[in-house]
Amino acid sequence: APMEIGGGGYKVVGLLEIREGAQAASANMYLPISEARDLIGTGADSANVAFLRLKNPSQLGSVKADLSKNLSGVSVTSSDSFMELMGGISKISDQFSFLASIVAFGGAVFLIVKTMLANLVERTREIGILKAVGWTEKDIQKQLMGEALLQAMLGGIAGLAIGYVLSFALGFLSIPLATPWELNLVPAFAKNTEAAVQSVQLPVRLSVTLSAISLLLSFAAGGLASYAMGSRAARMKPAEILRQL
Image (cartoon, rainbow, N blue to C red):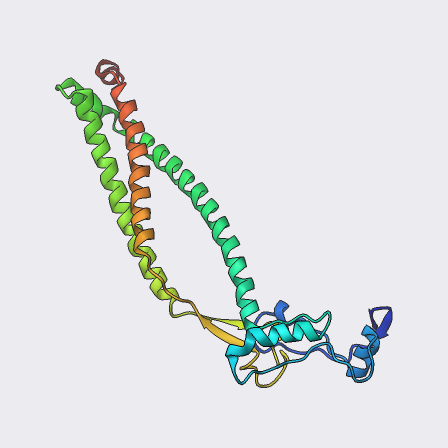
């Protein structure tokens, strides 16, 4: 069946296999230049895309300004424009990542508190015996809080170690990225796709600041959990505990 584009019917004569890169990034349709010009209503010698290569890249700004001034309605795009666009997307991604981190931290604190309170129930007999032999509420609170903070510290250090190992492993990965069509001189189905697809190696960036913040957050979560556990343990009466044994 013919494909209808812009009110005209076009026969599909073949499908092209994308050799590299994402299928969606190279989802293009190709037709004779004369029919393409008729489709967009331009003359026989007109063109809608022109590629320029500058001998002096430092003149990029002035060339873009001259083109925009002398050619009305033209849109000038460069690799710098693409990087600016990606930078804006990266900023939006960072904002969502920050919100997701806050939600994840709240969930982690909730799970830690719930787990430690469940552990406290299992240690009811131990707490009752300690109170019966003379331990004060502050002594029990200090003991439980010390254990919780130690677990939080060890968990934070272990998490950082695992994160460093995974980051180091990701540094060996490379991702093929299709060049945007307005910057790409090579069709996606071409035999030589080196210019059409660029392999980007993931950069490994280990931040000491983020590591310190992660440790502080783990200590904070452990502190909140230990405080909740110590407060509950302090309210336990030794007589009631021993009566239930």
